[in-house]
Length: 618
Ligand SMILES: [Zn+2]
Image (tube, rainbow, N blue to C red; front, top):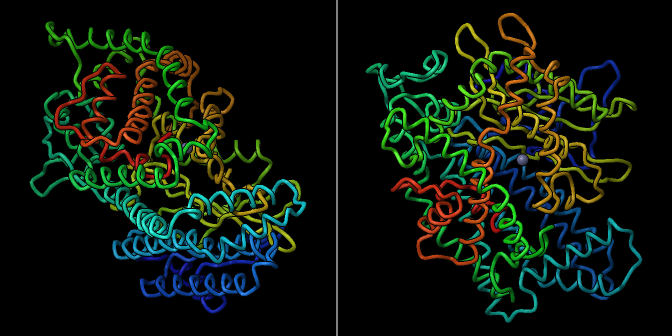
């Protein structure tokens, strides 16, 4: 890893005062008005042995704190010395561990990523073990039985603690509990392997000049080349999506789509199958009918039936519209093939793009010229600063994991008080997380005399700059940026008293709501004036282009909404039915709902990360 000299000097200067782990409990940086911005108490330059040491130290501190809790007799347990003490101990642990584990998603060094994955695995195991500790459970129940008068925030923590223990299997026979523990451990391993396999899966299509016919010149310039002079079209969004929309050669699109639909294959299919089986077994051990029933009880939707009703209602509203949209796209295909009666997976994006351009004489590539990344980033940051009453200062020379990464300090505009930090890691790299997401790094909580500093990182895969031209964002990515930035703010501006409810630690079916609202800013004329500026002339997005975009905004929305409903339904079906062949069942449900047959040989379930991540079953 290479670091700019300044950063290296800074890290050396910090090294003696910082513990080797990134723990910053009780320490809060303060912004000096007019002074240099603070840096977060985080390090991304740890060697692999140092990472392991940091992990061991954090674990030892956790063990010590928990030993202190259980040293007191059960009869003396109360909210403060048990539930609150455990929340603090686990909070300290989480604040030390998450920055280490984060490396698994972003480190440019494969060895560091692997060490971080290994630490993630043992950390998750520790959480499973923690949920199984009889001594802690007894004290939590004893504390709850005291019936102390607690305010809402504390009562919520007490309720959650008891509920989590009960879902860990207290009340089961010892044999059942042993089995439950084995299942939980295995499930956490399976779920991280599922995601890692998606991130690490790498494939590409090699095409020659002719194969790129129809694609913009910028696109060609952005592709890697083989020694033989062929172009490598990868499966990351900036490579895959334009190819599927613009490449004239249908066979090549089909070949690329096939690779895309088989990411993380074959390794993820057995993981998915086993994961679904274990989730069902776990739910049934705990007395629930199935996994969806168990998973949904703590979410806003509450029951699988309500999810099913919602999806059915929504399907009824969009199906006719989607049908009409597809028929219009099929008409475009018929110009090439008059006898065509259906659209393949690899044809929908291509013909829909042609129709869209004709109908709205609107070219997404043209729009992109108005959204150079730097302009969008500074514009969006400006909008957020205004609406949320915060001020961001870019920090030069702070701790980062790659030279592309930018670091900012957040200050409350009115009081000038320091709040936290956020990172922007926007461009694709090998081995990096392949989607756009906001990762909490330091989760907030009240500490004696104040609030612990927060930090979070946006990780995205925006197109990179090409020679003589800055990186330009499609408008959809501008929306993504607004969306993910909303998560960053949710994570860093949190005022939750307890870390268990900090930032985006909310009901899973609520967590997207703030960002989904905030992304609408990307369609406000006033906001677009602030965030657009043609890369060569600086001109703002012209009004006629804006009008066309707005008209085109709802284009094919029926089809895309139906696609989302199909994936949600397939997720619910897989978890409820636990089919022998999850991939086939996934394709069957998707085809049934969308009315579009899936390309043979496709296994998109294998790379649908949410299935095995925390979002499963609703
Ligand atoms: Zn989101």
